Image (tube, rainbow, N blue to C red; front, side):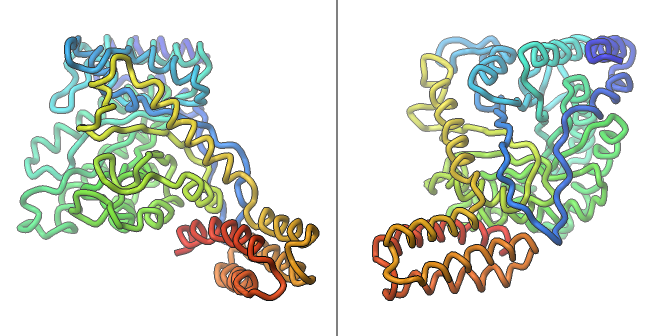
Length: 444
């Protein structure tokens, strides 16, 4: 069955069965380009390959919503969902994340506000558009709150998620991301974090994940500074649900202490890497402490070196956000924020390029070049280059203690004033530091 026939069949099915759209689309969804399985943890290889760059349509959230809702005046300049996808393709993106918010008829608080056949037709049209211009679909998502104290509200979100899972299949999206839910006001009287999670979030996730599996769609749980604020909380939820069709959307901008307003001063890099082995998608952002935080910008070289050290092979949607009060917020701009999004994508590509070379090999080669060009006053550089090479071999064997031992010896050698010029020592130490930080993130 070819792709176009599958999509037409899905639309026809929608006309007959509003919440059973995708029996015809299951074969297509199952054959969508999926990330490779994570490598064995008993051995590692630095991933020097190219990562497909994906853009999340949420980069144009305000602009697409202006179009969907027919806003004018002081709102953000409108852009259609299809035009945003076209822009992503022209900006050099390999994939796009089509959040369900940007399909007319989506509503956060109700079931869809437009006929099912109309929504299905629009989704099929987006899929055709992506096919025609040559861009992949990495996923989609909904907003939900499975921690809400009101069982009727939670049930509504379960049904909404099932509906948009059917639409995900029509889009050809391999996965649909969901949230755990905001911290409820009654958490203190309902058994705390564990009580609310076990009683509310876990049963809802089990239901939507089992439903999605029958449709050939994976569910990805996105940490969001809410009931999944930390890596440990996010991983615990997956363990309690116990369904292999549930993975993690690793949101690099939302790890923080539980119930903290931002992630300022939190070790977000550690949490990002901790959930990575169970993630099939990682959402790359500019501010790891949150869009409204005063924290630093993401160190993309550190982030991507960690991804490569971990052997990650999943999707990587990039999402540019704005502080709601910032002067350059899209609502204050005369056109959609094309330049800002393009600049963000350039930052991502620069980080990917800077992290591409195997850092152990690069360090050994840099020491060798320095030794051969007079940066060392005697042959100690050979011993230091050998330490870098041995650290790389220990990495390949997944031996963290041996990696640390070899690199610690290398660091002591560079810190010594004997046998190395100060300029060489500073240059090589900076290169070593660029490896030590992501190593600590990955191995803890």
